[in-house]
Image (tube, rainbow, N blue to C red; front, side, top):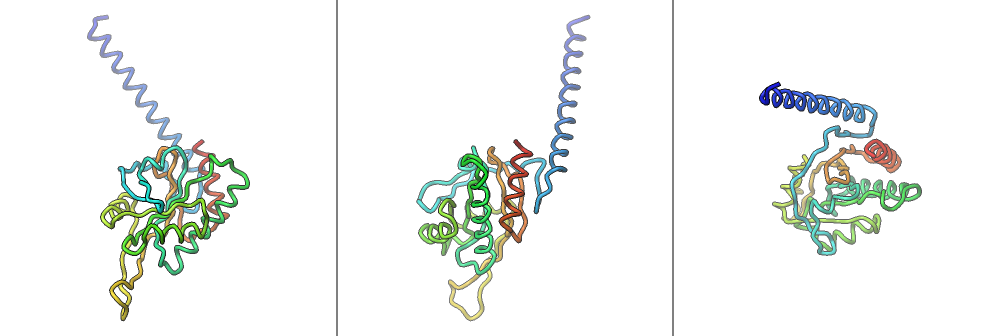
Length: 213
C-alpha cells in the first residue's frame, strides 16, 4: 500500500471513530436528560458562560472561577422584593438544611443571590438580607452594566417598574424567578422553575448530582 493510501485510510478510520464517539455521546447525554425529571429544565448540553466580575457582601471578588469545583445554585433578586425573593430564599434555606442532614459538606451547593437592584442593594444591605435566611449563603452585586451583561448571558430578565405617586427612588423590579444550577465545571446544568419548594429542590438536586456523577 502506498503512503498516500495508508494516510487516507488512517484519516478515514479516525473520522469514523470520531463520528461514532460523537453519536454515542449524544445518545448518552439524551438518555441522561430523559431520566432526569425535575421541576424545571435539565440541560443535556450544558451552557458555558463568559467570565464576569461581581463583588460579594464582604467586598471580595466573585467571578466565574468561584463557580468551579462545586455545585452552585444562583438566584437573581433584590432586597426590597415583596414576595418572590423572600419566599424563594426561605425555600432555598429549607432545601439546604434538608441536604445537610444527608450529604457531606463537599456535596452541598453554594447558594448565591445576585442583586438585580445594585443602586439600592449595598454590600451591607445584601449581607443582612441574605444571611437572615441562612448564614452559609452569599450575596453578590456589581454595577448595573455588569449586572445586565450577566443577566443577558443567563437569559435572566429584570425590568424596573416605577411606583406611581412615589419618589424617584421608589420602584419595584419585575424579574425572572428561576434558580440556576451550575455544575462543578461552572456551566449551567439546569433551570429550576418558580414557585420553589424546599423538598422539591432537594429532590431535584439529589437527582441531578447522582445522574451527573
